[in-house]
Length: 244
Image 1 (tube, one colour):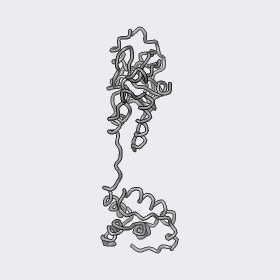
Image 2 (image 1 turned 180 degrees about the vertical axis):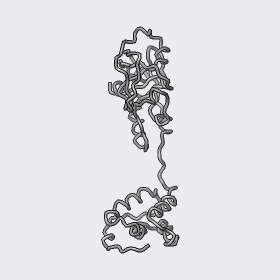
Image 3 (image 1 turned 90 degrees about the horizontal axis):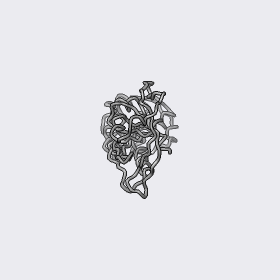
Image 4 (image 1 turned 90 degrees about the vertical axis):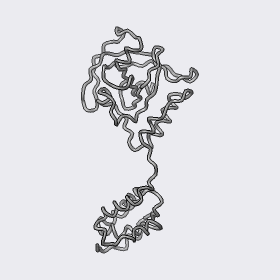
């Protein structure tokens, strides 16, 4: 693989990689700097060892130069070789195990939850059709808490900051001992992100308590849209209640 490279590459601010950390960041940094000078495949391959040192450089010089046919192949071999040095990535399983402490306020819990969620590559809060059809696997990383309504503890309460409505599902409504006649007429159906319209049974204002400890608990009146849908959750709390 032959090419002519100008000496201007020597002024590139390439930090040398020694193989002790994840390869992805170095590969991205290398391409960001070098492609300002050249995008020629052969040049990318020839310049790459100048960004290595220590064990990483020793690894590079082991293969025969003729055994690498493209920079894409070189990058793939490099990534595989040092993949075990990637930093541990948090996943949605971590969020699933976060629980509100008995003496922890809802705001403190949400702040702690959100700080961890930011570190996860795929946080996907959002109100979509799957909220009404059932549990979507991609929605499992949302926050689930318990609240108290009408002296009943309602578990499986989903907190979704992407939802523009607070939803009380019909099966939960029937279990908290409130007369159906108290549900008021609601004309506007809910609309998911893909445009599907979900018919509602009405709305109802209910005082909802957050927190187990009386000293730090908070009770607010929430206007719930009542929906008859097949879901594993009992309540979906959106922006109206979160920002109350």
